[in-house]
Image 1 (cartoon, rainbow, N blue to C red):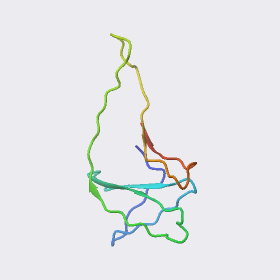
Image 2: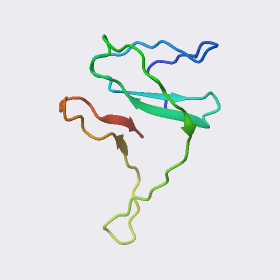
Image 3: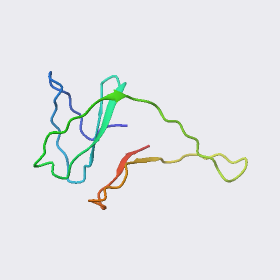
Image 4: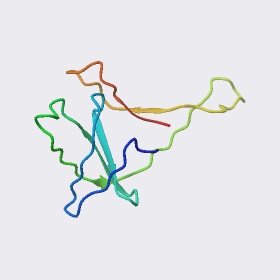
Length: 99
């Protein structure tokens, strides 16, 4: 997974990043990718420009995609990770990641 915008924290742990009107979520990782955080961005980002992110230990998820045809394997697949829909903004994209 690659970021659409990379940034580094300042000495005190703060950082600045630009968001588009479609952005609902921030995903932060430590450089060693052991800790991270997903946080929702308020629709009032102009009035509330500060978001507090609390990092936690990351984990892996593995999955299998079975086929309904016996003896046939799946050559490829595309998986999405989505967040719950935003009731206040039903047209907002809730897709967080695709792989």
